[in-house]
Length: 428
Image 1: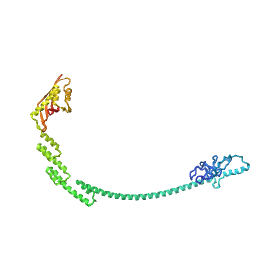
Image 2: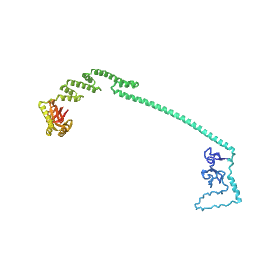
Image 3: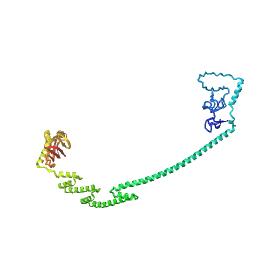
Image 4: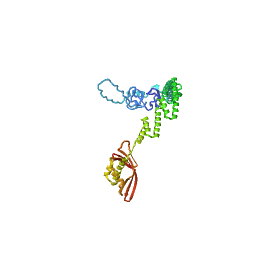
């Protein structure tokens, strides 16, 4: 049977699972109102036309004939309390059965507009599907037309945007080229390297004429200076360096040339090796690269030779120390050394450190006696005019008498003596 869809109003078979137009479920999901005959969905709960509520769900055309019908009570505006009413069910009389039967017949009756033979169901459904399909095709064509229009507009916008960007890019490139040329010119004009100037001329053929002329003039000047520089460097003489400096007092190579003159004068002073030669170097180059070396050379040259009295004094103090070690005399050792001295490379040593060395290194368990013997002084000198400080180097022999025999060791003792006290002593 063909009915109107309660959701969208389109014609549909009551046997169709869903409405082809709106998709709402049809078969098994419809109720026919027992009050007004309207078809509605089970899920709605009441008739949307008369708002009648069924006591039990009745599918379309299956309403029970035995259920009594009760009209809905319409609400009133009265604010008074409603008295509960009890409905009394009575058996219908013969006169009442006829109208009730007529109502039941009306419930099962459907308007003629909705009745079609079963053979036409499929044709109607097919026609409806064709209508839906045609509608969908029309919508697709409209969407495609819209898509084509949108695509054309997008392409047009993209072309315009690309043109604008290309224009801006060309403007930026030209501006960058101008800025790059300005930077290259500033770098080249301030450079003293001919290669930098030459690179500018090669890389900027379209530069302003004033820029190219300035760079060309600068390049010619540097090339002339280069020839003069090459000639001077080839001669490698102090006179040539001095002449170049007199012609070019502000040359960037000034420090380099002064350093070369310094080396030439130092080599001459070392070759002579005299006091006057090193003093002459110091006078010409007070802050020269070899100023400290010149001072060391002068110290050596200015050292005074020690007198015989100086030699005797130095040997006497050193012998007293060794005799104190031979006899294990703390007094002799203390009388020969300063309160603190450098003993065998250890600074801040005292008499106790010397005694400890004697016990650990010289007087071992099997040693009976030791004897230091000094040879002739090999060298006694004094520094500058300081007559109090003497440096002495003297050969010495250490004889050791052990329980198992005797042994001998040879040393060279070096010591510094100041104020008749040993401030430094070592032997090897």
